[in-house]
Image 1: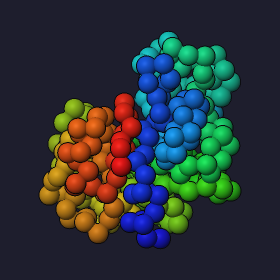
Image 2: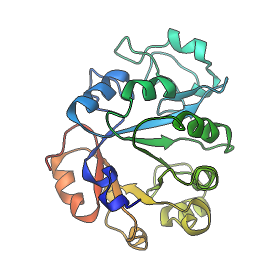
Image 3: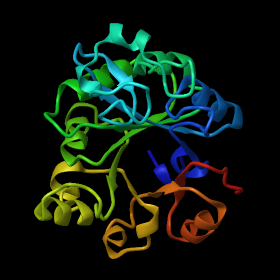
Image 4: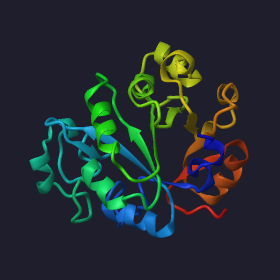
Length: 242
């Protein structure tokens, strides 16, 4: 697949759907708004205690719901009792989102896994097997992408990266991940997603043969500044004029 001529670079991608202070991120309404506007959707997937894959960004519940605790300890039955903050919407399962979107716009799926690789990734592959639409996966974790490289090489893979300045990681991990040193032998990405405010940089230039996405662009001025250095943007809080 020539990703330079694919949906991945042709239309700005809505970060967690089109959300605002009334529409929660990663919600069905945010996804509906993105579909209505014709934007591909970026979303986050994680696995909970009973193996259900849900669409949710944080590891904890407090920012996005009115509850405390950790997402990973929930089960599917718990989801009906939790509402996304400021709304009546529930945390959607990945299966529900796939059925709702149903190929109407492409999906950029961030696989969020800082632990053991296997169960989440296997579940994502299984749910996508019969999905009638365009999609790609991305992750900060090179070993997540290695799983897809080995078990579902037909799915486009993106290596997420940044300078990790506000992230609790060892200096060794920050050094390697910032420079994407595991790309060649572990993650084998088909594209790069790099933090917009850190572009341009010498680390992404090493992979100039791969499409480069910039995340997360939050204003028209930031878009105009970064678009000259990348092939597409993942945006929120405004809609880019292209």
